[in-house]
Image (cartoon, rainbow, N blue to C red):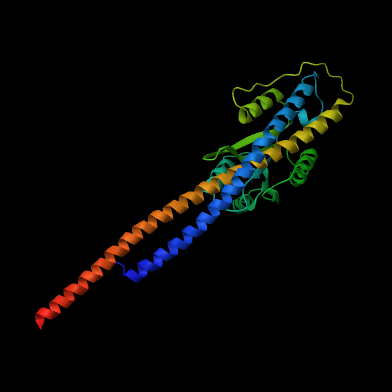
Length: 291
């Protein structure tokens, strides 16, 4: 049995660890609430923009704009949205398992240090890596989208897909892979967006007004670019809400486990101390009888 001094040192160390995890839990809780509010508030705009694009594109029998046309896929373009920090449970591990399933030729762009480290370590074709702050703005995401569009227009990548962690609720976050470009199946795109962000009681309202547009390719190009920026911005918000939620749950679990460990060590300490006292009494009694 360990002596009482070693047990006291372990108890002190675990208590210090519990203080740290509790502080991290409180910080994550504060960030989690703000991130969840930001993610939820951006969903209606993302859905409305998708509805507008779907309504306008369906007005034309043939859409010749390149963003709406399917083309042979030589290299898929995959944007992986990870985290900068760890201590968020299995969030990144689950996300990277989704990346490992990608078997076709692909070129990757990463957001977050953990994602870039994983892609570099596994020797995948990493075109660029970006970081975004805890409170990302639309401008922070714009440079990422411009890089994606530039590579798409130049033919370096033939699709724009995103692998991220979808925020469902505080206790549930699921990795998901979605394809954003080309926009060749608008009906399916809009339906998936509504099913991902809306409750079943909400319905997608169709705009039946006649629309007359001059320079339709220019309008569709600008709308598609705006949609991509808004959608990726929304996915970054979803991923951050997932990150802070997972970290809060992980730190709470660590704090609870530290408390349980302290209780076990305290019981062990009391037993060791009682055994030491009993041994001393026995030694004193044996010494008195021998005299």
